[in-house]
Amino acid sequence: MKRRHLLLAAAGAFAYGQTGSPGFYAIQNAMIHPASGPAIPNGTIVVRNGLIEAVGPSVPVPAGAWTIDGKGLHVYPGLIDALSTWGLPAAAPAAARPATPAADAPTGRRRGGGDETPANVQFLDDGGPEDRPSNTSWLKAGDLVQPADATLTAARNAGFTTAIVFPSTGVFAGQGSAVNLSGGRAGDMVVGSPVGQYVTLPTRSTAGFPASLMGSIAYVRQIYIDAEQYKAAKAMYAQNARGLQRPAYDRALEGVLESPRILLPATRKVDIDRMIRFGKELKIPVVLYGGAEAWRAADSLKASGVPILLNLKWPEHDRDGDPDAVESLRTLETRELAPSGAAALSKAGVRFAFYTTGLERPADVRRAVKRAVDAGLSNEEALRAMTLGAAEIYGVDDRLGSLENGKIANLFVTDGDWLAERTNVKMVFVDGKKFEPAPAPAGRAE
Image (cartoon, one colour):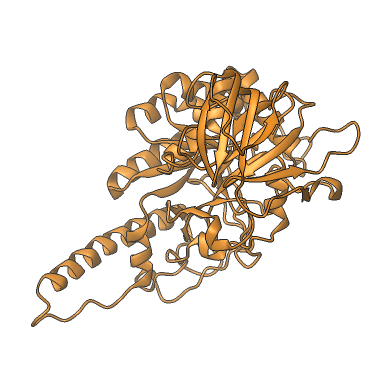
């Protein structure tokens, strides 16, 4: 995952008008888009003490509320990046987005199961799989977040209020956390943790095991076998310790057992089918990420019930590739049809969400989502894929993802449809704290 997504020009990278603590607000006469239901024209939403107190077409404005005239404005749930490294320190290197390693894939790389190994990943050869190389499963992203990171401010200015952040180095990279982009104390930003274990499947290594896709899959399989045995040994010891040797503490297996789900890379249809089968074998909830060929795999995803995260960095021509190289039909099809995957998944009833790895500006995110809309996804489903869909996949939809009574007051306000090119974000609320992004330079709405 690329660390410097959505970094804006200096004029737009900082917010002004931030309140120091959650306030008491009422936005009235606005077009409200709850994400969990139809839009509410001329609606009112009340925010108090960091929560949504009321939302609807005829909500009275409570006494004492700071009233904001929403005429001509649109109110949306805060956007969620479903797979991110925003706010994590540079010491936790960002992994590359899932490549398409097949010989006939868009990048022209060799065959494999998902990620190409990032150049900065160091594999520790500690003697073999029994010593848990390339495993930092115990790391929690929420413990690593740096609230002052400028990336968080830039993303918030674009309407993002939450990121599902993961460490990203190694095969078992670590545990993800749902983090609100509110700044302040790091502990106050964490909404849910852990939400999953981020796993890569490198196809090569310069430092021993695993050194291939087969080796990576075997390594993950062995870790889960060991984890089940470790769990059983601990349970037996806890039931009757007398006369038994205590199991040695293994923080790598502890981290695996603590994770409620596993994220696996899957770009091509064959990868998607393979990871669905692998997830069944591991007997743990699986979330796939990548999905450039999701349009080919909607039926198998539907049958399996496995959700998928789609990278909004759609496949494109390799700018550094050989300009005279003849590209295969499959490469051209994938590049052309990848944005239609979201509509295919929506039609099939597959759970999915978007993430923004590789996109550098808010305008790029809008254009990428707009490409999915132009390829058949409805505006409502596009919004859901950036909000409630992500919250549901990670099990935090009881507090995030939609504008409903009692949920965390994460929302953003615009002067037009959020996907329109000239629309500006006027204000953002995170945990009920109000932020006003600095205006974009004249003639540019990013």
